[in-house]
Image 1 (cartoon, rainbow, N blue to C red):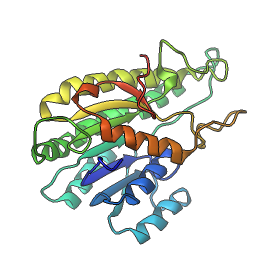
Image 2: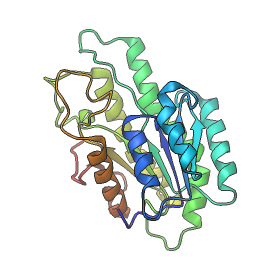
Image 3: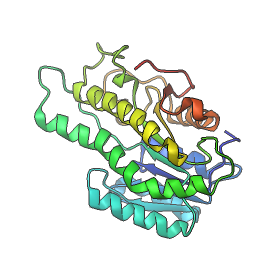
Image 4: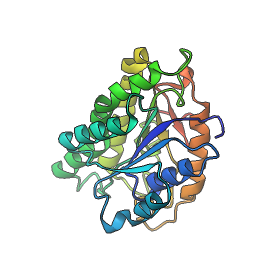
Length: 259
């Protein structure tokens, strides 16, 4: 984790769970980022109280209002981040915000499929487009040509549930719309890695593990991985990513997840 040295990072869905854990870990680094942008839907709401408390103690933490399903909100967030960064770019965009519904194949609905694709797949697409100018600026301002998360990167928070080969935990929950949206996110990540490589931007998908969060723990079984374990593992993975891993799907320990 010591190798991951970023001047600026944006985390979406940062008010709870893995997003909040990422923000805490970035702020607690020996050499923390100059700017940590924590994006969430309702920064002043009760569910963002822990984030507000952190911001009161860390002047380098900026809470950004963001609704990932709203193009106008995404555009406004990119402009606001750009104002804070001045002439420099954004090193790391972590598309963490996501939702799930526990629908089976038989009771899946049009409305839920649209909602999950919009949040989990289209949101990261639009965020990548909106923040690309800032990511390109960071890449141009970094020494050398090799891709890395310290230079410029988009990390999409995916799920083993999106693996078509494994169909992870099917008997635990079919969650069809969630699986489909994450499989689509994996393809988006591959496309981003190909389209943004020329701009010096690394792109990868991460499975954070089955984590003890509101989303992960909503069933009858307790997930085996804590937020801190997941986040510390993922940051270690991010510190080691290179051009070779751009466009890949890895878990929180750095193991390749089958498509």
